[in-house]
Amino acid sequence: MSEFKIPGVQLVADNAVLRKCLTKSPRHVLVLSAILVYLAVESYYLLFRFHGHIQDLSLYQSVALKIMNGQVPYRDFRIEYPLFSIIPILLPGVLSQLGGGSFESYVCWFIVQNLMLGAAMAWIINRLDASGSALPRFLIATLFFLPIFLFRFDPFPALLTLLAIAYVSRQPFISGMSLMVSIAAKLYSIVLIPVFGVYCIFNRNGRGLFRLAAGACCICAAIFGCIAWIGMDAASDFMYYHMLRGIQIESLAGGVLLLLEQTGLIALDVKHSFGAMHLVTPLSGAVLQCINILIPACFLAMMIFLCLTFYRAQASGCITFRRLNAAAAAQILLFILLNKVLSPQYLIWLLPLIPFCRVRASLIFTVVLMLTVLIFPGHYYSLISKQLQMVVILNIRNGLLIGLFWELVSDIASVRNRRGVSARQIPSA
Image 1 (cartoon, one colour):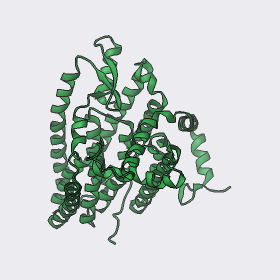
Image 2 (cartoon, one colour):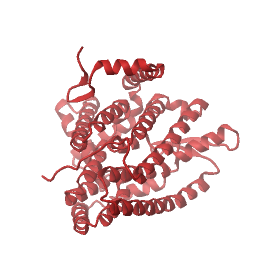
Image 3 (cartoon, one colour):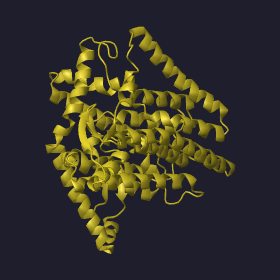
């Protein structure tokens, strides 16, 4: 019997092993059946729930059309995203002109672009993956997240973040450039600056830290020079846009408020603003103040933890790629959990990082992706109407994200790397 594999990636060495695994316990058959059912449901979402993406894709296309018509972003019109987000938004617009410039053509090229970005991430992961386990995990997670992965520009900064982590040891200048471009595309990766700094300091790599900063400064100089030369006076307005946002319905705080509303303890309304659904409640002000206090406190505690862990790791040898990757993933996930907004596409940021972590972390993350797709684009209107089953699913998803964060912290702190994925650094060019 032929091997069970896909081209270039061998998942199971022999079909007999797969059959034995499936028949060993009824739970294995149950899990496989659940996965097949999910894939069928996901296919339905891809084909018939596309309307959930039209608002964002229409915004992307309108930005691309304005630029191609000679308007300058942040000067002639405003964008709610950072400067380098224009790259993955504009490129499909340019290519769609080959097909008449229709909305359908733009979406087609946008999907092709994200598939290529996913392939680039897979190629880098394959080069980093010494054990052969990370790449299959990444491919499976991406397959389960296609209804969101294909229709947002977040694969672009996710690829740049992966490059920054991969090159931080051997090519810190390139790493710094990649990290800064990622920040200028989606801003979230700014939380990795202290992680990289602590990594270089405790690895006693002062020259690498200098090169990392030099690479980042080169991109910063190019950005500020471009802004000044073209006159993009409103280039920083996107930050004020996000500061004005309230508690988004899918956030950690939003899930708790929805549960409290179900028990009758509070009253709340769901309002559409800033292109998303936000919760309006008398507790909103207090919750937002609490978030503003928790964010610096939690990140300070995280940095102290990383300093202690990296110091112990360096004393016993060196800080491995896997530990650095887990630290970066935990830092990004902490940002996601503490944020007052938790859009489904934020999980794309973790897609290329979690496969290098423990098996349990990958399993939790896969379930999180499946539940996220079930919420959006699956049954988002049920969540907006505050139906109990969707409120419970949302809080289960958010609870699993907390569990995933704990797994990542345990992975960082572990003395010995057990049941994880060994990795090698990308060699110098």
